[in-house]
Structure formats: structure tokens, C-alpha cells
Amino acid sequence: MSELNLILLGPPGAGKGTQAERLREDFGLPHISAGDMLRAQVSDATDLGLKAKKYMDAGELVPDEVIIGMIIDRVGGEDARDGFLLDGFPRNEDQADALAEALEGLGRRLTAALLIEVPDEEVVRRLAGRRMCVKNPSHIYHVDFDPPKHEGVCDQDGARLIQRKDDAEETIRHRLEVYHQQTAPLVGYYERIGLVRRFDGSRGADEVHARIRAALATLRLEEKL
Ligand SMILES: [Zn+2]
Image 1 (cartoon, protein in one colour):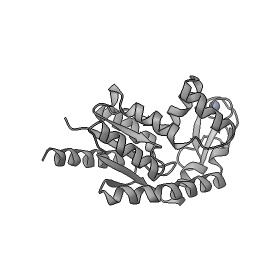
Image 2: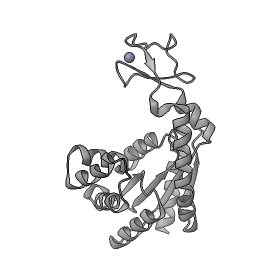
Image 3: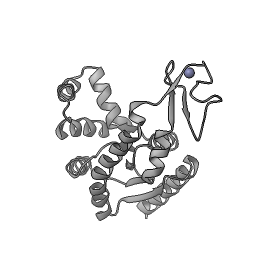
Image 4: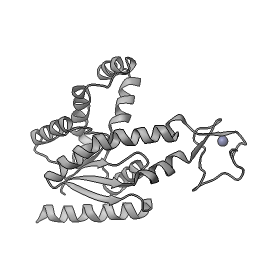
């Protein structure tokens, strides 16, 4: 079986987590989320986590070499032998170079960079409309797509619904700005080596999933030729 070594790119609110979960079910690929890994290392107080925490506590970005070491180690792990799905890494061309080098050292290479595209206005609409229950953060609603029966009140326990700070419109616009700044050069980088596959993330999750599956099936066939 040929490997599926994949990178997932797309703005916040594009449904990357949902697609990653489905690809994990389809192909048994581990979903390697840089953010989740970093949080886990910090909470387990590993050497790497303690190192990272120093920067985070100081309000600084965790340096590339710390993140790169963590990801490379994970990509070389047993459960990623047949492939992986990287999310939140690489974030810049230096990280992309480091990843390419590490994979080469393992006799492997990237299969594709999957780019899920969603227009900014759609991202704002999706995220700024979310409301969360003050009693139970897993009770989530959306003012347009999944409204509660009574405005501002949780259906399940009658508690008040609030908007998380992360979901405030100006926060989302700032995150989008950062996303575009970081991602545009990366998309260029992977386009130059022919690895980018684009998907229209404004379609429903089922359709995006079907299209990604079809693209991956084609890639696998091509690899065998
Ligand atoms: Zn609730």
C-alpha cells in the first residue's frame, strides 16, 4: 500500500477537524495537530513541554526548532508508518523545509497538501454566530444554522448562552489576517512542487469529504503507475 503523507491547510472554521476525523476513519491516518500536541506536552510536563511553556508564559511564540523536533518525532512514530495528516504544521517555509528534509531522511515524501478554501465572509458568519452555554461548554448553538428554541437560552438546561471571546468578529478577522499572511507563502511553496489540491470548503462537510477521498484515490493510483 502506498503511503498518504498529508498536510491539511485552511482557515479557522473551514471544518479541518471534521475532515481530519473522517480521513482518520477512512484510512487509519493519525491526525497530528501541532496545537493539540503542544498543549498535551505542556500539561504532561515533558522536557519539551517545559521548554515550550517558558516561551508561552512569556507570551512569546514557541521557536521553530522546538515545534519541528516534536512533529518530526511524531511523524516517524509507529502509527504514522502508512501516513499521517498534519494540521497546524508547517506554518512557514522553514518548517516546510525541515519537514521535507526529515521525511527524506526516512525515505519518504509528502503526498499532497490539501487546501480547504472558504471565503473570509463565510468564515466570519460560521464562527461569529456560535453561542455557547455558560453551564456546559459542550452545548453549542449557531444563530443561523442551529438556533436554540428561545434566543440566548440553552435548550438543554435553560442556562444563558454567550459568545466566546475567540468567536468575536474582530478576533476572527485578526485570525484570518494571520492565517492569510502565514498560508499564502506556504501554498506557493507547495504549488511550486505540484502538491496542492484545492477543495471548496463552502460546500457541506459530506461533499468536501467525498471530494477529498476521490482526490486521494486518484493520487494513490498515480503513485502505483
Ligand atoms: Zn446548556
